[in-house]
Image (cartoon, rainbow, N blue to C red; front, side):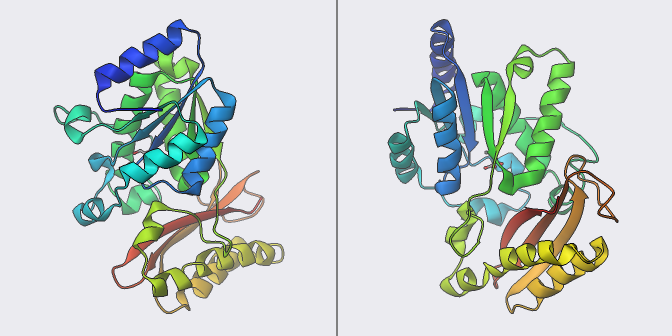
Length: 289
Ligand code: PAF
């Protein structure tokens, strides 16, 4: 497995793979890799001839400077994990390499990117689209893998790819976005790079998020959307140290809130919770139907 830092080397490697008719899988990450990332990379290794993993903490998607500074960076351990899984290439550029000048491109896929995370983290999805579109243009992958913990992110990226496809971008026509299921700890906590920032006491209460979501699915069978939402929020807020920022029960395709279980074929609950005094912002989601 090779680790490279420059865009020009990445492009040269990609064109050599293409010449050899290799199918390319891309797994974009911000590093601090865990078993959730490992599941994406393993799937890509199985489904493609070549797997490229990017490790880049993208500053343009952080609306909070402190959050960017605190974000864990563990490149050496990440590379050891990736080598073990069979990744072909790690692309770990500097900020200057990706943004030699400020990226002034603006992406807007309202209402998909304006609700939930889009409303509470202004500019976040614009930054995600900036980096992900650059990676897609550098690598022109056949498949790109994203974890469903960031449920809304996948919807925004799909909207961005559809937009490029409508503009006839060849890379977008080739590309399939592959969503991958959330990987959880034994106690239900969704794996996240941010979990390493939790104190022992915070880590002990964090599983109550998934516990409430899972219980709300059973509850939903005999209650309305509004009652189910209130049940989950109250259960989480009753735990000392947890505070729900938002909980939305939405049409899984459009991300618009539903008021009845009959409003959509697929319904997802998407939550963000502040955990502890710092606080650490944890996101999770669950499928109702
Ligand atoms: O999901 C993430 O880790 C990031 O948002 C991504 C897709 C790697 C873009 O920086």
